[in-house]
Length: 149
Image (cartoon, rainbow, N blue to C red; front, side):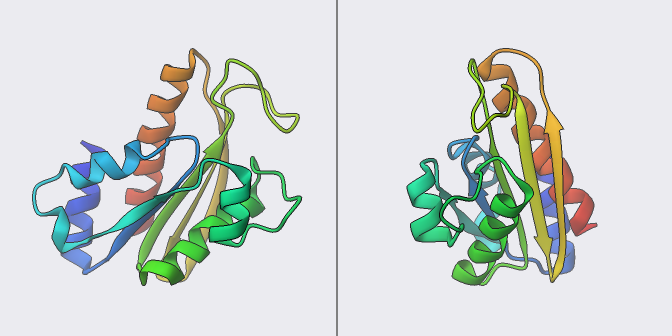
């Protein structure tokens, strides 16, 4: 449902959409790519799961906590530049069962960047790793749609 809304908004406003993923491991990209007509507006996604990839490919500063506003904001702005995208969402978090970087499992940061308007938000999702990832995907699409509207 949220992927369809993102598609409708992208079409209505002429957005090119991209996603920078860590926690969600490519599943956001898969969800957007599955929407009919996605080749018209979906530029693509980048899965930067390891910290070293975030640093080397997306310009996240070395030593920056990967579960932070700075990390996801940098991921979003770098990918917007790399793919010439108008609307980007990025996500990084601790899926569990253990925490990461001093953050408990379920802690997730999101960033959106839509035609220069940036937003970062921290959320916490309870449950198993699968439940955390599902909640993170849904939240990322909802946040992106809100900013695109």
